[in-house]
Amino acid sequence: MIRFDNVHKAFGDNEVLRGFTLDVNEGETMVIIGFSGTGKSVAIKHIVGLLEPDEGSVHVDGVEVGSLTRRELYALRTKIGYVFQFAALFDSLTIGENVAMGLRKQGLLDENAIHERVREALELVDLDLSVETKLPAELSGGMRKRVGIARAIALRPKYLLYDEPTTGLDPVTSAIIDDLMLRMQRQLGVTGIVITHDMRSAYTVGTRIAMLYEGTVRQVGTVDEIKQTTDPIVRQFIEGRAEPGPVDAPLAQAPATRAG
Image (cartoon, rainbow, N blue to C red; front, side, top):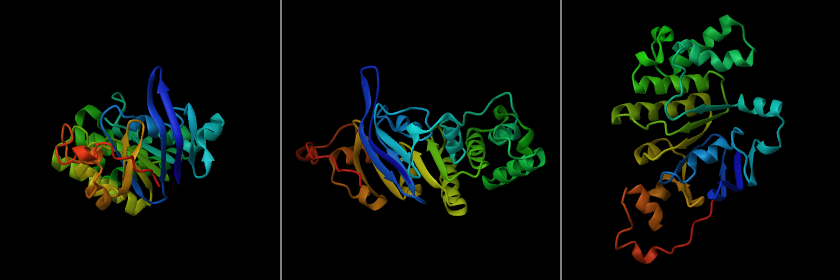
């Protein structure tokens, strides 16, 4: 599993995470929701060692990420696929070269095996193999997102981290990306963490949903538990309201639900 234990992280005077605690169980897809700037992306960057906590710890498969040597951290990263918000493809490289990048850096496969792995990954995300020789600028936004997923799964990771995978996409394309995330969980058995503002997507792909608010987990639960929540802050977010309505006002001081 992945475990965040009382993680604090500040940038100057801005304390983003203030005791963030959350367990992600093997085989599930945990969706993390929350208002902009609440630290969702900051949280998952700790998993791959891009950030280190000021206080607290992050464990992956029972190993504390912050205690790893550079070589051990690199080995951990080979088990984790990261799908960036805007795909983060290299414009000067072909699609095939983008997908193959991590495999070539590993240096474990010959070129024939890398080529086969690239084609396998593209097929898994329903991209025609003709895209292999195209440049990112020649593809639509939705197709670039799929390439980002293909690059992540080419390494055959145990974990997949998705940072706002449906941002900027139309509803039809967003639904296609949701279906891909579900398929990755079913076919590859990966454990996923999805950062999103899109509640339709969250309800579709999530095994559980956690809301990050003011640096801590406000509530975590199944899709049905989140849909039926009485917490006014969580309801405000999932209903897309600017502020709690009159009915919610008496509950405004409700205590935060602990992650469990």
